[in-house]
Image (cartoon, rainbow, N blue to C red; front, side, top):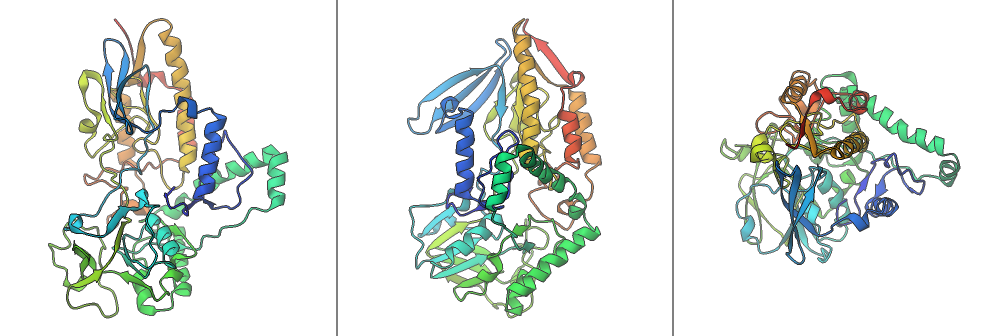
Length: 474
């Protein structure tokens, strides 16, 4: 969760650790942290975890059948070499901050940070603050800091769909039932996965359910923002699902406050004390180069006829994360020292998002093409981990005979990825007029698969050994 502690999420509990103490259907950051700390204590994870540790590289040794993992303690700077029979990459995707390429960032004399690296030591009271971006992180930050700042500028490239949160306090009677009748709690958990799976049509381009969601978002906007010009600037133009939708009760009302300004001009450079922007109608082809479809559209209302400079004290980057280099979390070198990042480039391919040909005993959670909007990420992770546990048991058994490893065959991996390419389906976030992190610069869609969660469960319920090359130490 964001370090400012006020972000919320509707992610479900893990199937192996169901709890009844949630206070709200949208749990706050501190409550989620408490849950994961309890999970860590229950599984005794603290004793076997190396904290404050940076992984530099992992290399497969073809002679010893071991992964050699080089790490560094970020406090002491001491490096250490680990040997492992099996290597897992559970680093995820949303952890490498991405900053917009705006000239002058290094010249800014005020304070600046990315939303994922929140400064708890800095007081924003009475400061002029700018947030670049209006995505999920920025949209949760803005309403929380608006009451204390002097002026808040929000720089928007394209508006998204926003809905009322619909959060509900969990009553005591429901907690009581969950505590004493565990099967009911389990069914409640399963209902989340079923509900997500049934929502697939809602995310598909052109469907009645997709259009209905767009209309619902627009209707919510109409009731929340009083200024018609401002409403038009906030009105989503893309299909529902092109951008990640927001479920927030306080986002739209924030724009009715006198100290908030929505800026739909493009920031073209950063000065020592502010941001210079240019109105959409003044942008030329060079200004719009490398910008996504629909960015900085000309809207109704009077726009500045020349460049505008807004002085600020603090700049917050709500610009998301780098989703291009999937193999670059740390350097992974497989058979013949082939580097995973170089092999993948910007078009990563794996076997069912869990393993890669040429990298023995190397497994992933949330690897390329793991999920979609109609499969909860927590459920996907659980299915993948269950598969990995079966694999570890198998490798352990085989190693009692002789050093052993396995990795997907090239044929099995290619077959899986051909299916992914041919059967992408028609989700709104893959349509031609939508620019999103779901698509890479090369046209790859590493964030997406078209499967229902039931399909993934069926495939991962057991190991298909015919899809693997098995190797023994000679």
